[in-house]
Image (cartoon, rainbow, N blue to C red; front, side):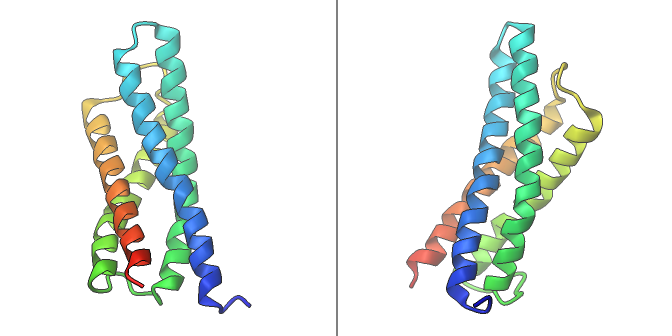
Length: 141
């Protein structure tokens, strides 16, 4: 039944892995493109970064929705849930903001601004922290 907490837990677990992986792949592609001498390869890596950040941002909405249901709509919570949310909310905001910027500007041919790259690396770190504390939530039982 849809009110069964284990269903939401499984759904949240399934939905969260895509945004985490896609954010990290996007950051990786953008970083590698900086050191690549071939202009076509740079463009391909930046295009991959754009696609993965956009898909990750879209997928993050499902992760957030299922997480809020599991947390009984507590935006902050306490203890381990609080630590998880302290990473989740800024990561979610950055992911959606960076994806929006990337899609609107369609900048795949040229190097992204330093501020974008710094925020991307920060978002990747925050997503990783959210994943860590999410895992701790599972281990506390």
